[in-house]
Amino acid sequence: MDEIPGRLRAAVGDEPAIETVDIGGGDALVVTPEETYLYRSEGLLSDESVAAYPHDVDRLAVESGRRKNAVVLESYEGTREFTVPADVTDVVVAAMLEGVLRTTGVVGSEEAVRAQFRFSDLTLVVTDEKLFKHVGPSVWNEDFEMFDYESLTDLNFQEGSVATQVVLEIQGRQHRVKVPNEQAGRVRRAVQSAVFEHHGVSSLGGLREKIAVEEPEPGSKPDEAAPGAVSDPVPETDETDDNSGGVDWSPPADQDVTGPRGRPTDPEADAPSAAAVGDRTAGRATGAGDDEGEDVSDAGAGAGSGSAENLEARIDDLEAQLERQNDLLESQGETIEQLVEELRRGR
Image 1 (cartoon, one colour):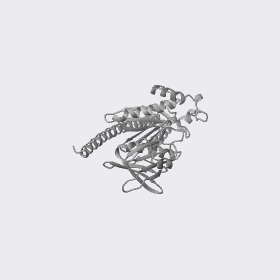
Image 2: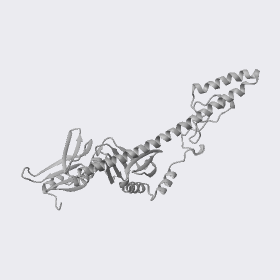
Image 3: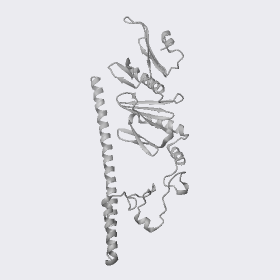
């Protein structure tokens, strides 16, 4: 639109515009951080008008039609909606989403929104400080996830046959976001650019090196531990080490906890030890109790270790099967969407 109509310009006032969109037929739409203003020109059946839609909402959604789409805003005051041509919907919704995020305080006033992506039921928003993820039929509601770059401990991208996974490690815990391979390059560039700039690096290798310097390595030496950290107690006598089990003792991060000292207390596992104590007492007379007690204890430790290894193997297999099933479901979903689209076009 070459010139904003006077009535619309008066309604917007001095508010900064995020986006101005010509929606055809002499109508226009202006999105500011706090409100969306919809201008309708005078027609045969209606007068010239301007309607304002505040961004202080709980939900933003889009209902698709054949030629026009309805933009829906829900708040505690009720539900309001308006229609725009399908070919400008993405521009309108992107600007309105930024306004909603700023008005509701999710994105700070000085925080820059660098990119937005909408894939079916997934919405991603990349700012210069955080990555936001929303999953659901609506474009946005209060049920979203936020990943702060300052808490990032690793970043990776795993390519699959159908989708690419953005793997964000936040304080040691991995979070995965799947995006279609067709758009994976754009998502990767946007996320990397924002994260690299935030941390002052230019590559994934540089990011990991900087994080490694900032984050202390696990299993550090006791004299290098952070203030207030609890170190392993030093047993005073052999009797304490063998029998007490160390009630307040916890294994270091790099120690195998499946061994005899690290495994959790279990009544059945302790039973052979009690028998071994009885045999040891009797063994003072017979000379055979000590050997039997040691054999039972060793057998119990071996069984516990083997059980843990089998459980880990089963979990790994289940995770691999689940990943394959998810890829298959995504592939089938894309095929169905393509068939629906072709049917709509009359092919």
